[in-house]
Length: 412
Image (tube, rainbow, N blue to C red; front, side, top):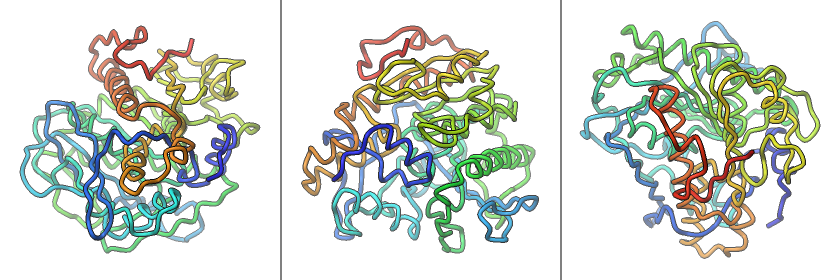
């Protein structure tokens, strides 16, 4: 495999290249997996919160907006809602059956394997499918994936947050990655490689539309285009007065840019996403130039921070930091790479161990960070951030580095 520099990686992402081209990290420690004749099934890291969880998908149609990629159709989205639930009913799977095939094959082929050797469709999550909601008035957190990637690739973080009492809504930005709709059709990938500004604008509009749909749901309406039955208690579970957002790569960019134009989001997190439209040279976004007046966390890898003169300078992060008016913090996983913030952190080491992918090849993709330690650290700081700013709970972990999570450092 070819080793790509950190600057090349982020440049590719900003240009719309799928994240399977991005380095991941090694060490087969997390996600032991379960073999099957149809392909290797992963084992997701177990969530550590006190609540059992469930999930349900919604098909949302925005009749006010055309698809931005020239299909001539109205904009349609698939989202998943994850929430605290009674532990009843069937287990939910990692990906819908038809979309699971190209999504899993992308990872397999990138690791030098054959198509079909990884099975996302029969990989079980820790969530029940459509179970009744446990409790009322949970804070809301939105999740946006990386450019050209699926909403399923944040499942590790999403399950953790749902197990801690949040309703988490994951968004697929149609046209960027395979998206399966209720009729079994899979929307094609049509994302251009040279129109990042349109992509981010579409993502911001998607996010605001999802917020509208949640508001509709909270007053008892069913926003699902097919009118499919919703889990018992879902409407009463939504506390839209406390709403956060996080995203991976371009999803982090989406979170920041949406917060600039929509005050319904109270706090946000950017997992290693640049805030400009191409990299390393390119137009800075409005949020990079203006900052925000609400709490925002930057969380980078491999030297990506707001600091000048470091191993990886991002002009957009430096500008955002200088203009940020709300609470801010810049964290880093210096021995991890961009892929460490997606589910690749647990899946790639497990797949590599199953099929004997050389450790040095996997290390080129994910760096040398310990996978288990990386996941523990990310979970700890994400949950601390949202506990502080959506629940008003004091979180000393956000004040200084912790020896419990040596993989995470403060960029100061």
